[in-house]
Every structure is written in structure tokens, then in C-alpha cells.
Amino acid sequence: MKTVNYQDLDFFLLQMQPAYPVRPEGLKKEAEWRSIYGFRIWIPESFSLADKEVIEEVFWSENGPEVLFVTEQRTAGITMQSIEQEIQSGKEIKNQLSKLDNRIVCYDIGKTEGNVTVHWVEYKSFAGDERVYNLLFFFQIGNKNIMGTFYCLFEEYDIWKPLVWEMIQSIGEYR
Image (cartoon, rainbow, N blue to C red; front, side, top):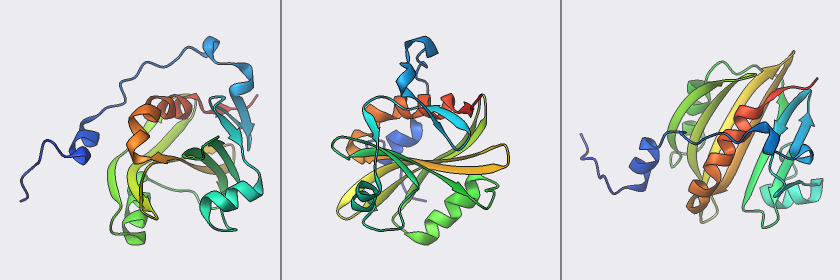
């Protein structure tokens, strides 16, 4: 068994819990509420909807996500797409991620119980020479399966993580 290094950043991240207070809905601007695929989500105004060209530049591919909200510097973003197959659990995603790249470090999996049950997987991946913090999430709205990912530079995750949890917990059916 490997000795635990309590100074290790991965150990620190594993120990963090999403214990951040949620901002009351009244303090969120109406323009920050986005309606996508029949659901509503709060995404801060520092994120703007990217066009197809920006999506291709960020993901270095023509096969990027259907929807991307990205910061002006493009160092953080949140993607959304409708998927055909229903995902059963975070463990299923975790197993697929470890098959994709053995450098991926999964930190935690779980689900939120809010307006909509949202399953999530928190992990670190790599893009070029950069370490990337990711929170992949998935849920059902009506008969649609939705998958999204929040990503940012790993060095910035402590800044973004409280907002990401607010975004995930704000997901609800569009009425």
C-alpha cells in the first residue's frame, strides 16, 4: 500500500466537500438563466455562448459538443449535448474515462437531489501540456438524456468549483 502524502494536491481535492452556500435565486440575473433542450440552468454572465468556430478552436476538432458557454479567455467552459443512450451511473463514466487515458484521475462520483437528479463525475484530465479540472454531469429531462461538462485549468478549479456546484444544482425543467 502506498503511503498517503498529505501535501499532495490530489489528496487535498479528494478531501474537499461541496460545502459552499448556494446563492439565492433572487440574486441571479434573469439573463443568466439559460434554456437548453427543455431544461433551465443558471450560467454566470462571465460565460457566453460560443459559435461553431469557437467550439472547433477550443476542442481542436469538428466533433465538439453541441453547446458551449465559455469565458472570454477560453480557460473555462461548460458544454451540453443531448445523447441517445441513457447513462446508468457515474461508475460507468469513470470506467470509460480510465480506458480513454490512464493519466486521468477520478476524484469523486455522486448525484445531487434538487429539481432534477443530476449524476456527476469529478476528475482531472490533460489537454496538450495543461492539466484540466472537469466535472462531467448527466441527467434526464422528459425523454431526453443530457450530458454536460464543466472544465477549467486545474490551477483555477478552487475559484470555479463553488459556481459549478451552483450551476449543477440550478438545473430544472423549463416551464
